[in-house]
Length: 280
Ligand SMILES: [Zn+2]
Image (cartoon, rainbow, N blue to C red):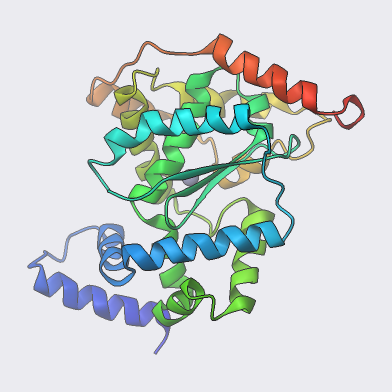
């Protein structure tokens, strides 16, 4: 039996057990399955394994305590509201790579943000929007769910225990190559965006930050930043995605007054000061 089929069979059983209707959205069901079958502990282990593997594969984490604290501070403003949707542990890691504009989430509440993204954003509300989007992926357990769907429960359990190093390095390599653990569906992207604007507004940030960021990104084709398009490849800034963000903001009357131009500017200055002129 394939992993996918096993998941769907389990999904069917769960649906019956929970008295769900068959019209329930498939992805909600899958999220429920991931939640029921991949324990919190297993997900935490999985996140640790992926983190070690990313380091093994050469990811350079920021060693600047000011930059790291900055990212942690932004995340800490989002998690109180996110905890209403999912209680888990949170970790944010800054990847020291000024040429890559990207961010991704792995199981166990691990968020990764590239210094290139911090340098490309124009204000803090944009960075908050991106981090909140990744928080949304974690809340909805998208990564764990997709790993189960793609590789099957047994393999995911082995991954979590470090018993399948080959697959683990494959998963990590894919993450570094594509900027995502596994490609998210459009539904998952919209779901993460919905959480993103809710969480940003709850922290009193302008919830339009995420839309601002991906609307102007195509215009930021800086030849010195050769991977500026990475974020767009994994998070297409399609008009309907921006439309969806605007709809959620309007429908839920979301607002926030913080934009944070000066705050991000000082971090950018710091990052630029640490980056040799020749490589920028
Ligand atoms: Zn996403």
